[in-house]
Amino acid sequence: MSFARSALLWVSENRQLRQTLPRYKFIRRAVSRFMPGEELVDAMFAAQQLQAGNINTIVTRLGENVSTAAETQEVTEHYLNALPQIQQKNLDAYISVKPTQLGLDFNEKLCLQNLTAIVERAQALKNWIWIDMEQSGYVDRTLALYKNIRRQYPHVGLCVQAYLYRTPKDLEALLPYSPAIRLVKGAYMEPPNVAYPKKADVNASFLALAKMLLANIKKNDVTLGVATHDKILIKQIQQAAAEMGLAKTAYEFQLLYGIQSDEQLRLAKEGYRMRTLISYGSFWFPWYVRRLAERPANVWFVVKNMFQ
Ligand code: FDA
Image 1 (cartoon, rainbow, N blue to C red):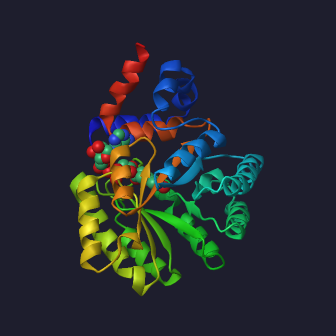
Image 2 (image 1 turned 90 degrees about the vertical axis):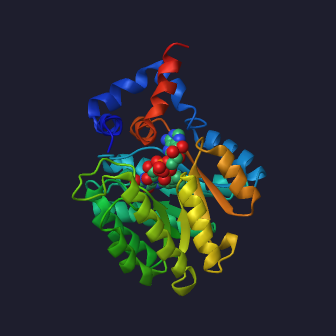
């Protein structure tokens, strides 16, 4: 892992910097590149525009590591109200949630209860809920949460991270659940005994896992979201899927708002299912710094904004 990436990931997890840095105007200006606004209406407006170009969406309200039951209640209510608004606007927009937004840090039962309420409302409205994967210390609890909910509700998906050594085994154990899986490289700072430190190994793991999931789309009724901006991997996965005889619509690409927008349009135009994840909310700092860490050259964009 490069020094710049490690330093940025350290900043993203530093409590004091999480509180002070977002107050600077130039940082607030720079974040708008990755986020259409802080409110749900901003995300829905962007979703409407993307939908006109055949790109569906996932919306997520930024926030993580909340520490009181009242805060989790507020987040849950927010999503329960967001679901009918999405339906009223005829948007094909799923919702993605972070388990630590719903109480995973301090009360697993409460987290399950909150998530169940959201998934139940989504299911009633024929929508889907996706569960993000956070730092490696949360993986066991998040897998348990997913399995628990998936037993009752089909419209729920889970993110898994290719950089973790454990992920092939975790996926094997998930296959009997006919899971919906979003495959990502992984965004957090992890020690080398837990995750591949080298990018080449992460990429190789991503490709192997994607192939395994593609092969299980028919066999185990797997739903697959390939979530990467890596054009080489995207090509390799398209090729592998075609060789397996899978249609372009048998799986989906999921990319982030504001990143590789041309590639997103191209995928949609070529007949692939394309879904853009749009973030909104006021607690954007750690999430934003993780985006900088993915491409430390983005820091220049922040610096440029400092002088505007
Ligand atoms: P990589 O980082 O190798 O990037 C490939 C290319 O894409 C770069 O060379 C650059 O051109 C471009 N690019 C990538 N990131 C960029 C950026 N921030 N700014 C500008 N250009 C950029 N992670 C996680 O741990 N848990 C989760 O729940 C999720 N959820 C999630 C959902 C979706 C829809 C996506 C797309 C990603 C996530 N992630 C995630 C983040 C993921 O783990 C990973 O950190 C990022 O997707 C960046 O990795 P890439 O696969 O894009 O490859």
